[in-house]
Image 1 (cartoon, helix red, strand yellow):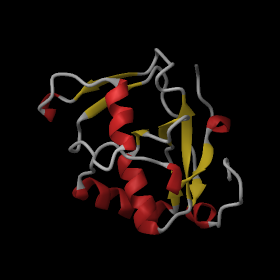
Image 2 (cartoon, helix red, strand yellow):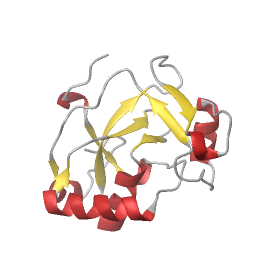
Image 3 (cartoon, one colour):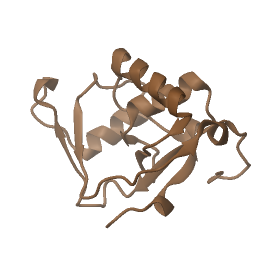
Image 4 (cartoon, one colour):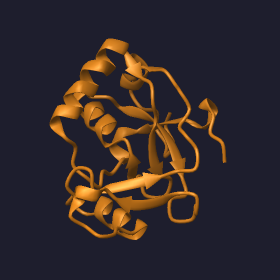
Length: 146
């Protein structure tokens, strides 16, 4: 599957569920860059069924800091898409991690340490530019408010 800008949806920030912590220094650098650019240039990748964040924890964290109502995301069938795999980063202290464990953690009140999961996707995300003022707009009513 090849993604394009048309595949990017604006999803409610409140729907997203992180499964790992962020590194404050990386988040702060990204926050500064996002404010300088005035928008998001890369979508998050999330599970379409649960809202579990697969890629983009730092982008999610700065969205919370900025008080955004929604963020750009590519929604994928995480458990069903065999082109998406998960492994662990070498220094994570774990020998393996399953997709099910990622979903379970995202649905819990806990998170893994930073740089635990390492997702591999067949395609790169498309370049985008979504201005911050669009992401600040109040949500419409409905499950896929965008």
